[in-house]
Amino acid sequence: MSVDEEAGENLLSQIMGLWIQPEVDKRTLVGKLPKNFDSEKDLEKAQVIMNPFVELDRIRLNEEVNGHMIARYKEGGKKLGERLWKMKWKTI
Image 1 (cartoon, helix red, strand yellow):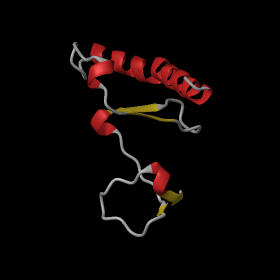
Image 2 (cartoon, rainbow, N blue to C red):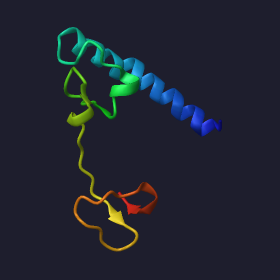
Image 3 (spheres, helix red, strand yellow):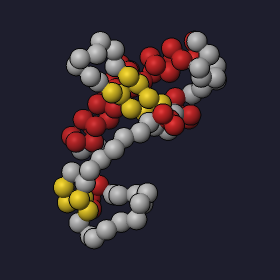
């Protein structure tokens, strides 16, 4: 494993431990997620939204995750809703 890969794994592990898993546990406890929810199997997407002007971070899971990006594509136009791959972006 390269240093970059190891750093990425460490970062994701810390994000899971600090924000994502506590949110999953909280939602499970209050009944917003099934008791048998397994983060490794059932969690497809997660998003942590930090705002320095708000005391609490917002955590979005699975279908709640969304975002918007303004980017320029290297190879002409793309159709609305078509997936853009990182390596083909010219600018973000």
